[in-house]
Amino acid sequence: ETGVTQTPRHLVMGMTNKKSLKCEQHLGHNAMYWYKQSAKKPLELMFVYSLEERVENNSVPSRFSPECPNSSHLFLHLHTLQPEDSALYLCASSQDPGISANEKLFFGSGTQLSVL
Amino acid sequence: KQEVTQIPAALSVPEGENLVLNCSFTDSAIYNLQWFRQDPGKGLTSLLLIQSSQREQTSGRLNASLDKSSGRSTLYIAASQPGDSATYLCAAKIQGAQKLVFGQGTRLTINP
Image 1 (cartoon, chains in turn purple, brown):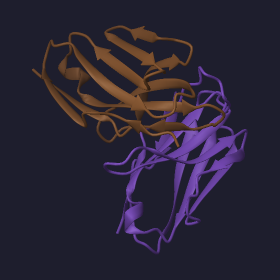
Image 2 (image 1 turned 90 degrees about the vertical axis):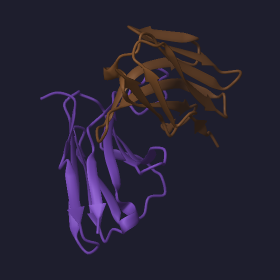
Image 3 (image 1 turned 90 degrees about the horizontal axis):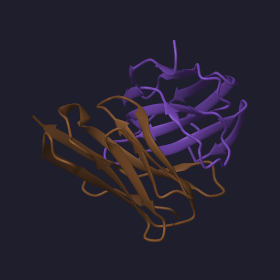
Image 4 (image 1 turned 30 degrees about the vertical axis):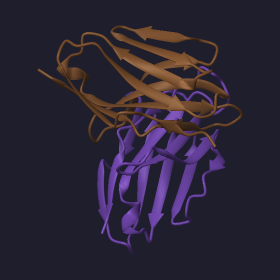
C-alpha cells in the first residue's frame, strides 16, 4: 500500500462516545498533520507532528487528543464531541515540517465524521 | 494574518474551453503557493507548487502563475475535460511557519 491511508472512512458517533481516527503514511516522511474541513470553511490546521513530537497545536479544544507513536502513524482521539465538530478530518504528511519552499503535502482520503 | 481568497466559489464551463481559476493572498511573505484538487468526499491531491522565487509552473494542461507583488496566483486549465470537474484549492505557505493557509476553493464543473 502506498501514500497516506486513513480509517475509518466514515464515522457516526454520539456526544458521549469515545472514538479514534487512524492515519498511516507509507512515504517515509517525518512530519504528519491533522486538518479539519467543515462545510463552506477553509481547511483548518489542527496539529503538526515532527519526528513524533507535537510542534504545533492550533488552539484545538481538548476534546481532540492527538497521538503519534512513531513517524508512520498518527491518531486523533475523540471524546465528548459536539455536533459542530462534524466535518471531514484529513491527515497529511510531508518529508519535513520545516520551512522548505519546495515542501509538498500528501493527503489521505479523510474520515467523514458525524456527531449526533 | 494571512488570508487566502478564491473567487468565484463555483464555475461551470463547456468541455473544451480554456479557463482560469483565481487565488489572492494578503501577505506577500510566502515560501510557496500550492494548488490542490479535491474530488467529492476525498482528500487533496497536489497539482502544482510555485516557490516564491518562481513565476510559474506547468504540468500537462495545467499552468500556475504567481505574482507576489499583487498577491495573486492563477491556475490555467487548457482544453478542459469532464474529468477536470472537482474543487480546486490554493494554499500559501507562510514564511517562518509550518502551516499552509488555504482558500475556500472553487468548485469547477465541466459540462460535456
